[in-house]
Length: 259
Image (cartoon, one colour):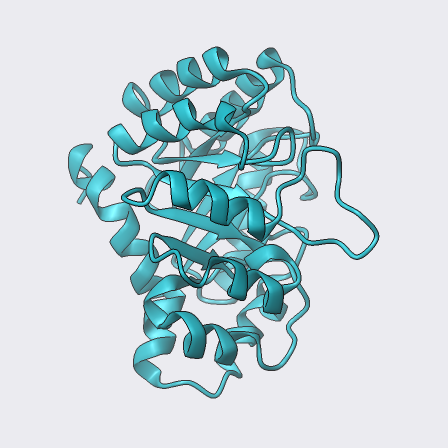
């Protein structure tokens, strides 16, 4: 079982969401990827308005409309627009097919403004994915670090959370969230450097690591190489490549009646 937590519509050829999704699935097929999770439409908006959130979620909904057997989707939300984000969670998750949320760089997740969004998604048993990055040349104004993620996790210790990109600087990221057992890491986005998966398994345990590619910004092949070339057990590899994501998704899939 090979499931990819982290895919986008931006950066892939196609004049419509349907064409972009078809291309994404075509590329996934080359690498044997069974299911993908898609979030955010196009173009990328680092500080989206409430209307832009809705438009990009509509693009994802349309992209998934012919691919429910191969893809899941998360709603794009923002702590800059709490009421609009709560409305999008109800529209796209409670009353629609999406199964989680994506928080990007509009505001730090350590800010309490995000709490209502996290709580509402958790009530619906949705998956919560937060982009994080520790950049040597400085983060975007509202871009969260793994340390911000640790603050959020401490406020919501019973809520499963995913630390996107493992904080970018993965050694710092792993250490930052290590003590917070409700936080899993996403492997997507960084270079396929030797040692990242081995350190994560050693420090967090394989049960807290999820394969994501960040395609099409990164290739499926380069990101799979992190896991396939890692010196870990076959049991750990299976959990990372699909088992852990399936476990996190099962509550909301069951609630929606999805086999």
